[in-house]
Amino acid sequence: METIRVTDLGRIYVIESGFWRRKRKEVDALSQVTFSVAGGEIFGLLGPNGAGKTTTIKILTTLLLPTTGTAEVLGYDVARKPTAIRPRINVVFGGERTLYWRLTGRDNLQYFADLYRVSPRRQRELIGRLLEQAGLTEAADRRVETYSKGMKQRLSIVRALVNNPEVLFLDEPTIGLDPVGAQAARELIAALAEGGATVILTTHYMLEAELLCGRIGIINHGRLVALDSPAALKRLAVGLSVVEAVTAGLSPGDLESLRDLPGAGAMQSVSLGARLLLQIPTVTPEATAEALSERLGGRAAEVRVREANLEDAYIRLVGGKS
Amino acid sequence: MRSTLRAILRSAFTQAEHSLARSMMRFVVLFQPIIFTTISCYMFRWWGADDFGEYVIVGSGLMTLWMTTLWSSATDINRERWMGTLELLLIAPVAFPVILLGKILGNTALGLLTLGISYVWARLGLGVSITIADPAALVLALVLVLFSFVGFALVLAHLFMLSRQANVIANGLSFPIYLASGLYFPLTILPAWFRCIGLCTPMAWAREAIRWAVLGEAATGLWTTSFASAATGLAVVGLVDFVLAFVLFRLVFERKIRQAGQLAVA
Image (cartoon, rainbow over all chains, first blue to last red; front, side):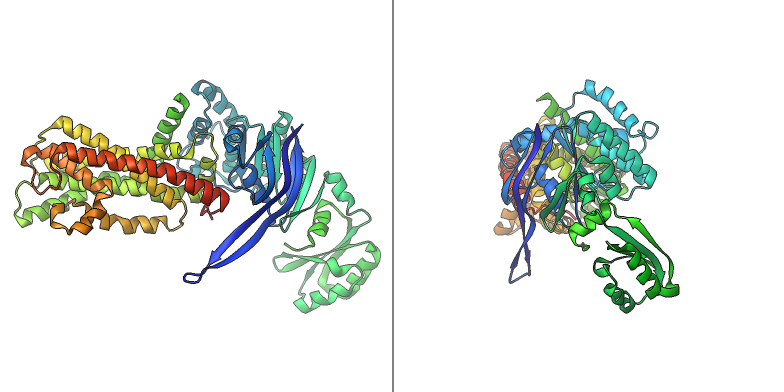
């Protein structure tokens, strides 16, 4: 059964600037996006910054109205029936925000439980369980401002569980977490879906999307450019290998001149401080690796070839630009 | 209904706790009335005025109460915005104006404390004598003050939701309102057009009602004719503000925030 149905969804923001002569500019944040999510599914939304992921989440959580198209959550139209949707969903916006830092972890949970009309009797059992789930039982009566980033993020996630939501929206819930903290958050998310909740997850971490999501939609410039399972999306990169080299001392001119190598038109460069990681997706890895080694000479510590992954498929889909 | 009341009370307590956790708010609630009371007391003594106790206590207490009201509606909305909790409150099942009501009640109740602190400090610390002509009327006046201040704060809060400059606007509003409300001098000495500005806020009416309750027939320099007329004015201003807040919620939340996407969040 479909829990979420989005049809031709569009959202235009009007930006006004200037003091005396107001100038209006329309920005297409979302355009003709269509997808549906089944009950109990973990659905990933990937895309560069500003692609329209958070706008989609805000529309689905009733915070924003669509300009065109429709969106239904649990069978209710988000524009017309927001009050029927709100008690049955919850949302986590990533980062350390969305908590009252000068209150304790327990106070935060109690407050939001009251806002979701959870009875005091149920709260007594629920809050202890949520704190335990987040690994915060010991720290429950400390102010949130004394928590580490990971503790705050875990508290944010369990805060969104106070109403036992049927649909949970997670907007970059593991952003900025260390690997152990991110792993703990992922386990929490996986456990939610096992409990029957539908989860909509936006993330920049491909591994996270691949591990958690049953299907992934990729949004770029407000449009849905791909929608499939992680395995199917990876097949977009089938036959593709990636030649990688860590280099030092390359000028922008040197970098540009590498683009005439075979397959190097889609080359990515990632800064590693003083060094640079070059990645070239190619169907002729040996020839490209050899040509690259030759061109870089002593400026490359190592030139290696690896199989393409979901991240490479993603980069291919969004055009390598964010 | 019970869960809504619980949400209001929890919002009030949470807000008061969160506010008092800030040293600036502790200063405003606990020490500012003492400073205002002391300054105004010595000003009146220097002028050689008799019977100034009510001006000192009510003026200082209401001034601080006004500041906490403005804070609850303006700076706290901004704080919620930067903490990222404003969006969560807007989509909670308990309606946002109800949550806001609880939060403002929490801060306004803290503000009422300042009236008590002004009174105790003026009596015990500065030796100012004041007798209350009609204690029952004073209790009624304080209840109406709470009602109308909360209504006014609700209006301001909805307006401030749209602006990142809420703090600047709130600071800019403080002193003109003190002036227009006649907190430290009779409103009758102000030009009529300027007096009208004050009459749109609960401050001027609050001062009149409290002054009638405290001084009774001995009250001078008032523009209302009795406690009843001052109390009625206070209640009407409060009621109008509550209605206005409801209209603004529909306008601000539905039109500006959901339709135009103008919730001013970073």
